[in-house]
Image 1 (cartoon, rainbow, N blue to C red):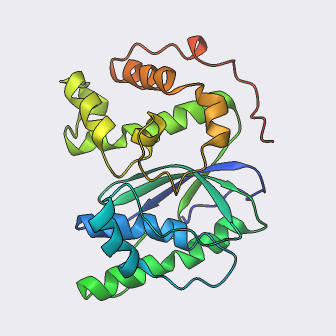
Image 2: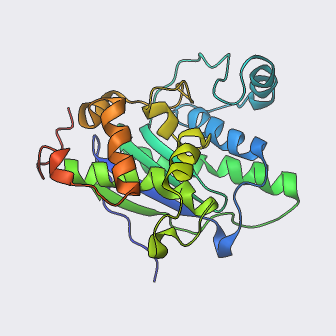
Length: 241
């Protein structure tokens, strides 16, 4: 049965999960990840977008790869705010806030441009991702913190696939891996200059307090010692202004 989306409302936050169709990998090499992240930037615009990815990528490789895209400076009319992300080989997690009417739906229609790039590059046909994508409405501060932590823990699967059932065998290795994983917003929220041009952190920083507190919370989740009430204000609804 197809997944039903919640009704997307302006200024509300949603956790978006996009999975490759039939387990199809969405990214096969570093350039694919980079292209997707640039697409998140480029297609987040009410106006028609004309990608100059090749030019930007050449400059990025020369001047700062992959955390910066020198030359991104155009004016845009945003559809959504991207609050967090994690790209995995065969699925994607995004935390977004809709800021324009029908913004989320319009944005993902435009993101079909990445599928066109992928199909042309790898000589394949058809859909790249399962449809429709899954979307979960974030309603409370507790839920927001749990979700953004869950999103950033996803890369653990790449070094220990059974961690959710068996526990983490080497917590220090996992912590180091997460903090250096390029295709996630986690390094950025720890204060690193990782894809600063993509993320709107103003709202989340009100919830996450400071990088050290959030980092400690994630570490506590890894060590299974988290006490939510020691970090959160409670289960109050989000203040979205």
